[in-house]
Length: 162
View 1: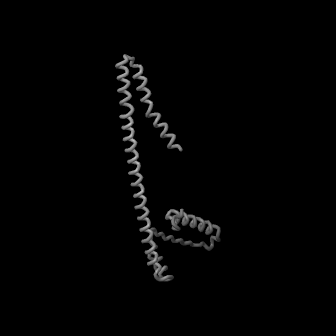
View 2: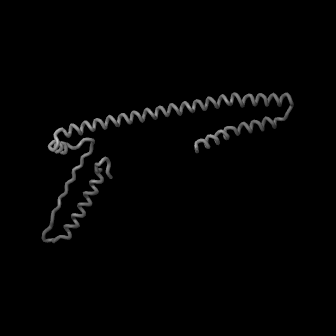
View 3: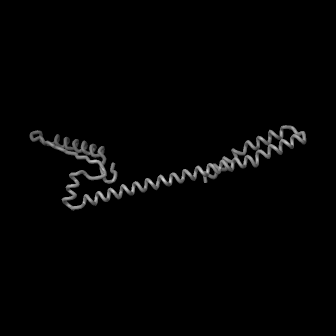
């Protein structure tokens, strides 16, 4: 597995084991009178900056290279911090926007109940009272109003799909 051009420790160990197996197989095929000895060395370094030995080699080849590497690492860190800050800002804005939408939806839902449902029951009750009608109309009207939320939900689901 390669990440940013650096091999992971697991990958290095797997490659070292594979190399060791190949070398052992080669030594078995050689003449037993002259056994061969193989030695392998693995050096691992993890981090943003190179190891001190690597820094010395860079400086021998190109003086000032490590300073350039440090500057590059600092700039990358600043960039990551800015991206993180921008992402958090966008998430906060979206959260406020969603909360405002929910509040408006609840407000309009309450207003619609006050404007539509309460007058409906008042008019229906007065009609039943003054005309001596049966309660069947009241029950039928209440059932129709009870179906309104499911009707609204079905329209919301259709809008979300498209």
